[in-house]
Length: 321
Image 1: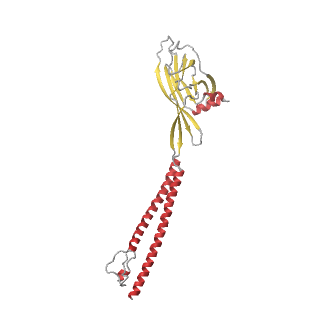
Image 2: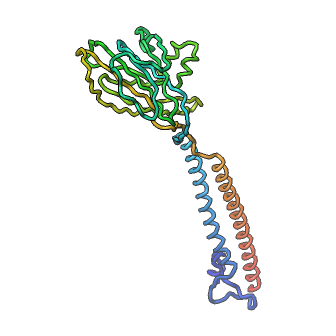
Image 3: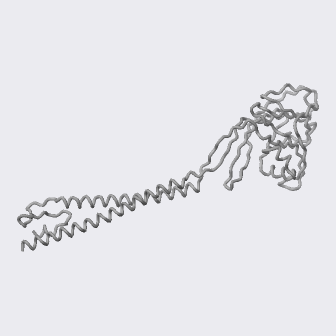
């Protein structure tokens, strides 16, 4: 009997209320089963609380990582007309023979190649010092580029170089976003210095027809500024020269055309949504508070049941005495 009276109240013995003596076989009462289930639920809720705390930590960590590492977003905008780009050419000793606008990728056969022809393009010459050395004087020929991408507008230029003391002959050029901005600039010298510092330069060689297909990429920086970059695809075709010419004579042919009517826009996007994180944290904290409240009530109920059990056991022992 002493062993039964000292048994844990969760696995308690049932006293015979009618005879006042304990039952010979120990069985679980409904109260003891409720206590067992309460303890199990308490451990489950503690486990859920630990999981909720881990989710809070993981959510905050993921949010901070997404803020540090934004995702690059690329979109395309279709345009019927481009703003005419500026084509800055550095011919050196080469002479511009002709410049024409053509459409639908059609260039008529050359008439009197190597001889001066029609110059139908808007051009302007400018001299400025090299922005990297501030000593060398650069002589640039600025040509207005094509606009109408739907009609496949292109600009065809022909240069002639009479003689050269170099082993390889080529003409440098660079592209900038707007020819109109160049015309409207109050200081064209500084404008060209900025362009040369910001844009890449390329070359096309003599004795070939170089076909340049341009595409425009606009990138939005973190500070809100928008930078413009040109991408180009180049195809080169050999020119079969059938003229009677000196050995040092060179002809240059270059074509500028838009590749497609799509402007590529690139920007960094933060995929972390603060509202989603706030909603998730609110749900987690609500679950924590509910779990803590349930655990508190379960402990109070278990203490109350134990006190009641001790009281009944004391009454039973008094009755036996």
